Length: 77
Length: 155
Image (cartoon, rainbow over all chains, first blue to last red; front, top):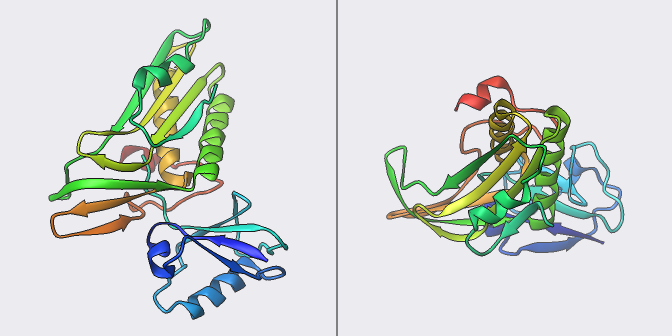
C-alpha cells in the first residue's frame, strides 16, 4: 500500500489529508490519471509530485510503501 | 542547531541571525518577509500558511547547500512560519553571512526566490469576500531541479 498526502486546495477536493492507495508499479502519470478519474474536480496538470519527500517526474514508478505527496504550485515566502 | 525550520510560533529574528554568526564573515544580510495588506487592489484580512514540514525542511536545506556551493564561505539559516498570520506578521526570516557584503546580498535574494519555487509551503488568503489557496503567486513556473532565471529575480 501507499500513503498519498494532499495539501492546500487538493486537500479540500479530497476532503482528507491522506489516502491509502495501492499505487505500486504505476507511474506517477498513471496515478494522477486514476485520481483525476476518481475526483471530478481534481486537476493535477500543474501539480508536482513527491516520492519519499523528493520531487519525482511523471515517468517515475511508485514502489510498495513509497510515500506519495501531491505538491500544488507553492506560495511560501 | 537547526538551521532550517518551520515554526508554529512567531519567529524571533535575532535567533535566526545568531545562527549564521561566524568569525570569517564580514557581512550578514537578513530578509524578513511580512504579510502585506493590499495585493492587486484587494484587501487581505489574514493568511493561513500550511507546509509539508519534513519536505519543506529538506528543501530549505537544499537551498542552503546551493548557496554554499555558489558563494564560498556562506552560512545560511531560514525559518518559515506556519498557521494563521495577521497583516504585518513575519512569515519568513532568512539570514546569510559571507566574508564580503555583495555575496551576502546576492545569496539572500537567491534564497527567497528559490523558496518561492521549491519549498512546499502554501498560503490561503482570506479576504472580506472569500478565501482561496494561492498557487503560482508570481505566475512563475516551478523549477524543482533548476535554478531561478534572471527574469524571476526582478518580479
